[in-house]
Image (cartoon, rainbow, N blue to C red; front, side):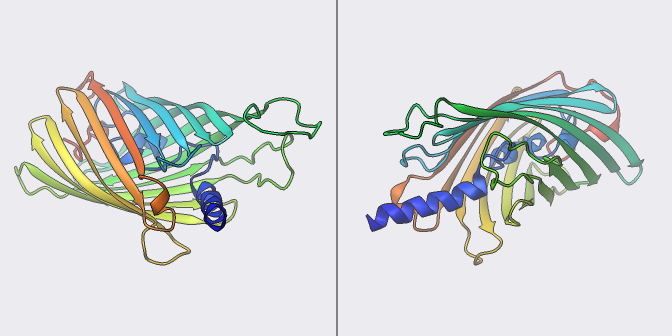
Length: 318
């Protein structure tokens, strides 16, 4: 009984960190050459059209553990303009949220000679949160008479600054308060969260190998918690194709320096087809009860080279 109680408390604490907050959970999907999931400012940068299908299974082996699926696509509609869309479905036990995010980005040249560019992004989010009660046992409360759901809309704003191979992106998600009229009034209505994503690409001359360290910082306004991801990728280039491998670690900033999760990741792009995989393992008491978190990404890149503006060229990837 003590072990069951411990696991339950751990699941509750982790759910607060990776819970359903009107956004796609930022696990490792953004590292699969899909930073558009972090910020709408990335829409239209790189290949003219890019599609990524992500599937994530968290804490495999734990009953009713969180699962997430998302489909992200972004492309250019003009030399300096990009649009994108994300559809997502996130289930956590008997709670589920699904919805869509529509994004717009405009790219500016700050200085062409020194390769400095600024991108501005805006997203409209439509989300439905649902509480499924069909799996509840022995429910005698007469007020629980059907599945409960609530629909919300919100906005994201962000920017991306690039200087040669260095990048810094900032995004503010869910900037409007959440509608909680149909739920418990003690539920927090401030679900704004902020992401800062930064890194750079190291590639000597015409070398076929490049290195990309990066970091993602997330802050949740509702209760002040925050996390930091430290990532490192090595990429082998073969013309427009490439293969990459790396490692990622996530830290809870209010806890010790020991990472909460750590794991390898790898991927490839071959003839416009993309495949990525990452694995994360918990480093705490939850470790004996699950086989880790698995994420797989399948994608396609096509319609390249339709813009001559350097502000939409992705020198980090190619």
